[in-house]
Image 1: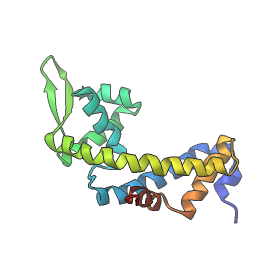
Image 2: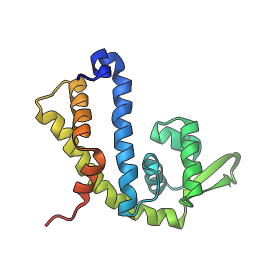
Image 3: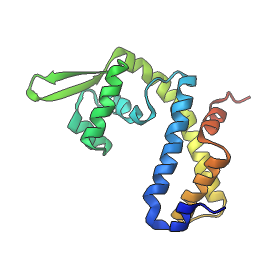
Image 4: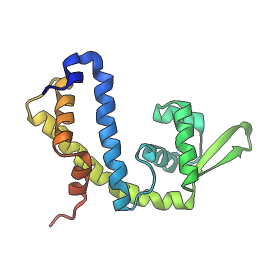
Length: 166
């Protein structure tokens, strides 16, 4: 049976991208704890940005990550709950709140960076499979990736990519 959304054509690109993103994020969420990562998948870029740039305001973070201010605030709340980041008022501008990594957050980044090696490998494999099907059209490549995720879920790809090579 053909996929209903695929039949609707490129007007449903956002639906397809959301479907793919959800598969990748859920696979990562299920896999990360097995490799020592406690932070939610969507917050990895926040941790990496704070490590690379030091303490940042929420607006700066949102701009750097090109995400909405409310979304970044929700990520900061989650990372704060996990004790990976802390917030404090900016002494130079009391309207501004600075977010920085905690010691626990810096330790988390060791696991994150190791996990990202397997994440890159599994993602590259998925992209390679789409182009190996002879696809050069982005729409068809995305659908090919989505199909490959139904065949072998992204979680399984991450598990395989993180297995020690013999």
